Image (cartoon, rainbow, N blue to C red; front, side, top):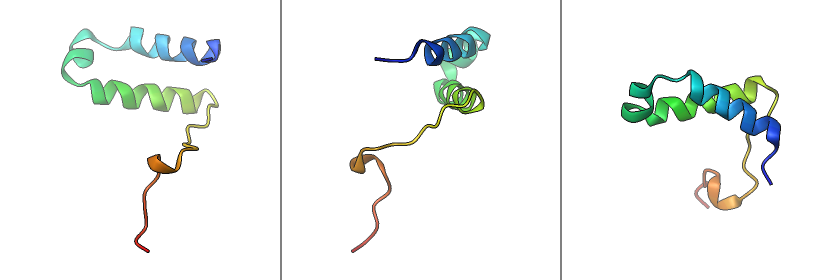
Length: 57
């Protein structure tokens, strides 16, 4: 289940974005959402080993 507070931060960030940014630069919008979540106190880390950088053996 996604926390309602996280959804509120994501929604507010998307509502502040310009339509052109959403359509032409979705990566920028995604980064803005991630930064907004971190600024709101969310810790964005992965717990799945396939999502972390791999080192040579």
